[in-house]
Image 1 (cartoon, rainbow, N blue to C red):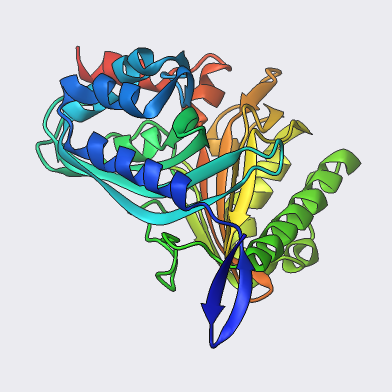
Image 2: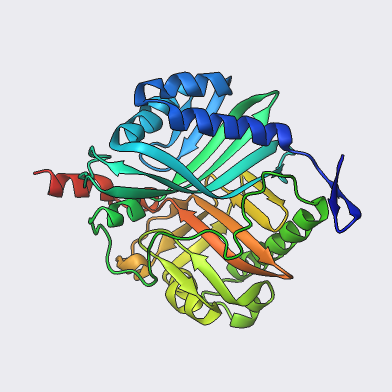
Length: 347
């Protein structure tokens, strides 16, 4: 147990400096590596039984070589001079199994000089939103969950694979208060407050699902959310500001146009300071009945893999960055937006 001094008072903290240092060293080495060096960097920092989970089409890979081959090497070949631009960085103990994890979220930015996943290059600056979870054990990264927003990437590159969005997609900022990089360990009690609030909010929504209710009264949200909340959703949905617009532009289309919502839990869920995060594999299953994402319905139950990153300000949740593997969710229903885009644009 370490101590954190603030205004002359000592507060308890749980230390994650070793894990944070390892992950930051890994980030630095990967950023400097050439595409062909990505596997060597991964092998240096990961365990022999390393497991890597990513969005479609990358999915699940075992070993540094496989993760580099399917994701890092192609990405670094396409986005030249790629930088990792972090907005949030935190460490914590996984509430699910007690393992120690480090999460960062932000943008990969580079020059889009070669095609990526069939998406035509632009030779211009390009961003790829990411959230990366790394489990650290015995000085090595043993598990990774890396979510990227491929539909947002396509939209920035001038491709429109989806019907018009209910929200607004753009290069999302980090926390309004610019306090998301927790390189120093935060007071333990602050993380407890944040995770308690997030878990209460998740439980409230899960009860709605179990009740069979399709809508959501605003007072349910007001228990946990600030009135001026911001919800930064994935490309294809977009962002919304304030509780009424969030309900109009995402929550109610989601709740009213999907049935059979079943929550499966999370792989990783933790908090540090005023920030919390989680991801699932999958988080939930649902069935579209028509209207969600502007798409038709069908009797095809499909899994959703989701990341949520939260910022608590005071006693309410203020901002929420969300990743949903929409290409995978759509593929389960017979639509491969990446293949369709490549087939059309590369004829």
